[in-house]
Length: 538
Image (tube, rainbow, N blue to C red; front, side, top):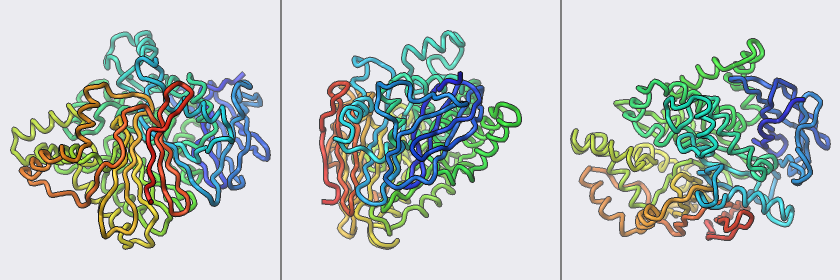
């Protein structure tokens, strides 16, 4: 009998379509069946693992359809009656849109190590109260879904049995080990597995999905590619991301037009395994970032939802550096338009950091690129890698380009002005709200950060970050920036709520022209308490 290895995951949805992703233990036909639903797809194979992406069409808007997964005629989901039925949930044509989001989730692990898991607690609340609570229309996971370089004991034992002490020691080495990492994160926690089967989920990667400081600088890339084990690591990391995360971010139409998906399916059908095709594609995607766009955008009613890859698409050469390559920046500029009720821009890395951190990264980039000569450049590069100075602020030209798009929208230069422009981000392991203060802007612009789901900072780092969120601490770094001839930022902002250092999940509600956000933290494995809330547009 065919068995379900991972999933089902309810991924991209629209008002009338839904996508289900599964991994099975052998090649088969996978069917998704329910009331008025019967859709099927054959599996494809990569590195000996078998996957199906099933697109369901013709659904009514706002549908809530219980479904089962059938593999070669045998029901493989649900696994029992412990959980409520998994539902296909399409988006409503009108009414509020709720986006639950967060980042940075260590799993598995004990409460003593990482605290209670916000995602597990969120799942338990939805399971316990059902329609008695507001459900998210979308769950967005903005990076570090898995930690490939900070492994738990289960993963370390698996590696020791598989390859002993071969490098990279204490880190995953290839596609096969990434597969095991995803299983530990998304299968072995039954609550989260059920959550992912019944809430539409979108993702984007951050550094730990590949390796800490991934693509920090040109020097970092040169150092990594000099390692004999890096090719298998980077192709395994990006390849598994393409399978387990990226495919589900695409609409059925985008996936049908994707040449890589067509090539993988064709190679799998012809040879039984598309590993060579996927490995060649992912190596090129790393070496030539302009060859692949990982960012994506969808319109959900009156909300334009843009998710920006701020890791794999970086432009890093001896001559130039950018958060995105030229092609991806052009695409982002096309997406950043008005004539919507709300514009949501998600990036794993916060666009608006606390000003002290922003100014420090501005200064560090300037000296790393030679503003203080060769000794300053060497010091700057060491600092950049040592303390993760590689957010949008560390790519100042890129920061200014995105700011110009946002300000133009806010001034009504690109169509009617949205009710809000919000950045959703994670990465920094604390949560906060920063508001833009520009008198000539006709909309509210804000940065909402929620991090971590489950991976809190230790006490000393918390103190440093709390100080960095204070407006007064930015002054020394502002003066250092002036000495390095860094121009002032093109907009003004400040942290108005937070910081909170608890494990957390946030929910953004977009209703009409209104936007608000609530952060919640798990105090037990099944109870969430409110950390804070804010009315963005009030």
